[in-house]
Amino acid sequence: MKIQLGLRAAWLVLGLTILTSFAKAQSQTAMNMEAGDGYAKADRELNVVYQKILKSYAAQPIFIKKFKTAQRLWVQLRDAELEARYPDTGDGRGSAEPMCKSIYLEKLTKERTSFLNIWLTGIPEGDVCTGSVKMSR
Image 1 (cartoon, one colour):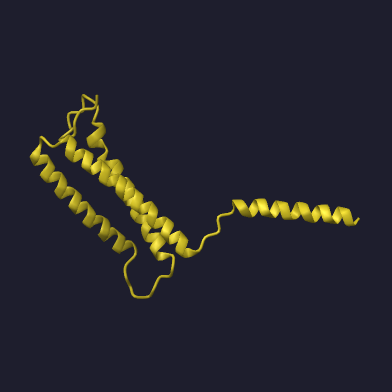
Image 2 (cartoon, rainbow, N blue to C red):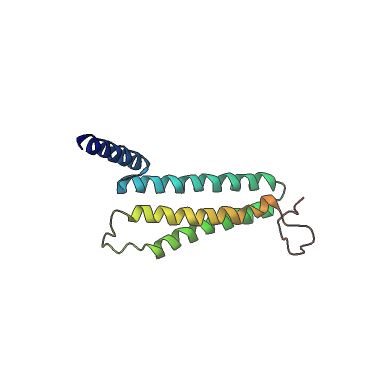
């Protein structure tokens, strides 16, 4: 009987150890930092795409000027959307707010990156409304 209880206890401890090794318990601070890192990564990716577009279209100065203006305005829109979603009301929304803001900024930034990629990938030939976007090959 004692051996059976000892084996059961050992199996229980082993099972709990395995389960807890897979669990990712985090503090709110750690989650805030992780979300901030996600946004920073998305922002770096956006900047890589932005720089590639500037390089790829360098021979088109009018486009470059308009494109830079559009990107500056998008940054203003992004910031305004963030403020609308999470207005500073002075009531202290809690320790999760930085995480929520970073997640939202990451989402908006990834959407913008996807949108800008069209200038790199191009539009299929035959579309008469390509504007400044190159034809894909």
